Image (cartoon, rainbow, N blue to C red; front, side, top):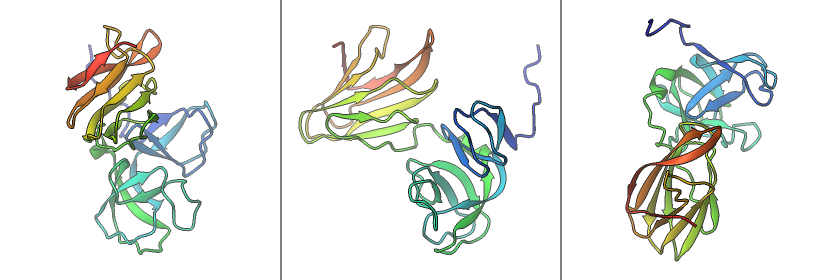
Length: 231
């Protein structure tokens, strides 16, 4: 049996979006960014460029040549609509794109980037920070990443089911002001536990998503200090 069959040089990948994608739109799948070179209608097969040199909209600020840059899906592009996404040098919570091939001035609308998807695959899915929603808040489940939880007393959080197979979350107590009880939308192990209680700094739990007979669920990968229970 053939173990590997050549498919393509890897400059583009197939993509079928749930909603229409415009030419030039940046699409990030987990930590892999791609670039629509032609329009892709909703639910139609198209392709995304994942390698090459691109001029990409950027946030305000000068960027030198040879600098690692990232895609902030909520970034404010120079001269564009705030919050629609922009290139940045901030890595936390953002998808790696590649490195700049020439300097961009503070007011330049774009930066020229050599997109290097070979490096993207080496990044851990847990390197992106996810904002702690605070007491009684819902932990975001749009992407993989880590959630540094800060408490100021006895607090709660909720966690919905995952959004894709292989998604990973690392939850831990960063600042301990009191116990944090996290209620999950479904069981996180075969025992049926659906509640996570963390009481001390460094208490942590890592979850990943699997397909359980057509339903996405979290499963515990490792647990250090968190108490699991069923409510």
